[in-house]
Image (cartoon, rainbow, N blue to C red):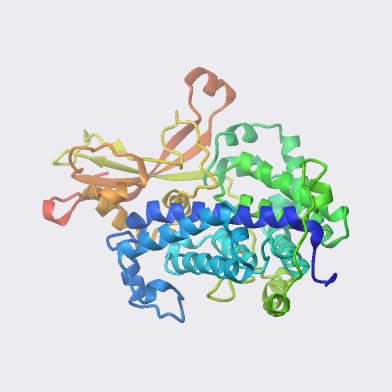
Length: 483
């Protein structure tokens, strides 16, 4: 079984499985804490309404058979408990034949959430987690040596993530080709982190070096993932370091972390042993049924790889595309276009019974997205603030907010408890506002002098009304002409 077993990759399997379990755990916690306001029966995009017009074939999910908010919470709880058990090494305690169904169940539970998550779950890292999680089913446990085929499939996944992102940049915005995209990106990315301000203010020659380094890491290094040792471990280390750089410069949920975890598929025990005290592991004879299952799965992935491979070399390359409802063997890539300016939708409310030029408007504060100019951007990743991310898209184009922004304003007029949990600050804790509105602002990072003198991280100017004042129909008030 020398062609099948990879005895030198015990540490790699440990990182792959426990790291993926940790991200699953975060994903289920995110779902549990946010779903009622976003997707619940009274959410902004209710799951029951989605299920009424989408069959199991179009959206495979356990919720096709039954949905209630309590059942959704139960699915999140089971998924989180199983993920925590796998993170603690539970997959190595049970026999191989039992560990595989546990991984399969966790994948099925999260797939059920993603497939009814609609706009809130339309991010590439959802597919990446599901694809990585499905690979974990076939990595085995301490009973057997890690299967070499599955480790190669994990590297193939890292290749698609990195090389796909590199190609989408070269084919997209000219600033990637002239090495100037990072003049803007740290400021205009979806959710800046606490160090983004400092990255933005690096000298422009360093920004150009950053972009050139990114091209090397995404367009050259991925090919070395299929080289022999120690070259492949070196390629993995480059991927890990560049992904940690992205972690430090922004908030991209678990995209960077799952890529880091997958990159360890190329790190052998001998390389890892130079930094960590690893002991030798003796494995049992690999059962033939496991060999057959892994080979069949690998062959299936090879067939499914046709579509993402074709996409990589297509002039019309798609970003973050899934070719099946089970999110297996997908295409990845992001930031083919980089914005030069940053606009933000700011929500406001007032308790005044009538609107006038003297109306006092108070702002709602979000947890992650820019609002108060004196508030330092926070680090949330790998946690994912779904509403904050969609507000960034809404500022780019109102089409992204189609179907949920008006409902969000309605829920604010009701002081809806679950909706307010998605926000950092509610300026109307005692009674709901009489009117709410949305305004558009242009945000720019402050200068060094402004930060020292005024303690502001941003400065902003108003671009006008995004959604005019709204009130509940029962209030019987008119907001016509008021801004």
